[in-house]
Image (cartoon, rainbow, N blue to C red):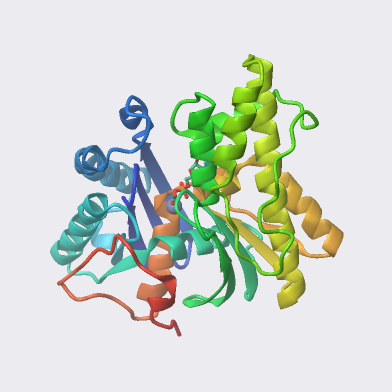
Amino acid sequence: MRVLGIETSCDETGIALYDTEHGLLGHALYSQVDLHAQYGGVVPELASRDHVRKIIPLIKKVLNDCDTAFEQIDGVAYTAGPGLIGALLVGAAVGRSLAWTWQVPAIGVHHIEGHLLAAQLEEPAPTYPFLALLVSGGHTQLVEVAGVGQYTLLGESVDDAAGEAFDKTAKLLGLNYPGGPALARLAEQGNPDVFQFPRPMTQRPGLDFSFSGFKTSVLTTWRAQEQTEQTRADIARAFEEAVIDTLAIKCRRALQQTGLTRLVIAGGVAANQRLRTRLTQLADKMGNRVYFPRPIFCTDNGAMIAYAGALRLAAGQCEPLKFNAHPRWAITELPLYD
Ligand code: KG4
Ligand code: ZN
């Protein structure tokens, strides 16, 4: 079964073609970073309009690159939420319309399910069950994944997500949007021993996270120092260390508590090289195995949506012509998959 995947939940238009027999055939991504950079963050209305401009040319490009005529497409998968409602509706309307025109089934995919399953696009793919650490701009969650649609939430952030903490800290330090990758680059120049930030919620039991306190710690530290480039880099490094250390402590605890032996890292922050190295070391030490999607499949992309949608469509699931998008959507509301 050959499935066209469409991702438009935020500021990236992602398109991909996944074949249940041959795997991922191709993918393309258009990032709106330059459009939003001048405003210091994503402007929802501009995001929707840019998806409208880019989505059809990108679909044509992927079909062309993959030598696929539309008659060869057996289904369409689009991100139905969570995300920005206007942006979601662009992908949903285009995906649903194409499916109707081509007379094939369509399905609305949960964006987080896409992230959770993205590592399955890699070799070797993790087998079920596994522990997933999802670290994106909107979510920080530890999830036990027993199979497609079988998700148990073990812990999550009670306030800011890890990616949000990266973005906000980057802004405080005067870095441009998108802050996460910029902060990680700056941290490369920093000395890890100059500043030390707390590891929130690691001293008490449980698997929840809290990242909102970093804003105050970072700002107070920055204001108390002579504001040189080196200080900025040293703070960036200390912040990155604190977030990574906190995530690693909670991953170790979750692996110990559940007895799971496979750890999957997903979401935009999973593209962070230092986090990848740290969690690989942790898994090695525990005799466990860690899996990451390639960095471009950690951040938002069409491939993970095509993949998750293809699984559900191949299992006979699809949606009626009446479609909806969900700006907020709990992953526990998903139907079981068999
Ligand atoms: O998964 P994603 O692309 O979008 C959401 O679903 O939210 O994640 C985006 C988040 C942003 O907060 C971004 O700053 C962060 O991932 N991010 C990073 C890195 N690359 C992206 N954070 C730290 N280090 C990186 N290399
Ligand atoms: Zn995402």
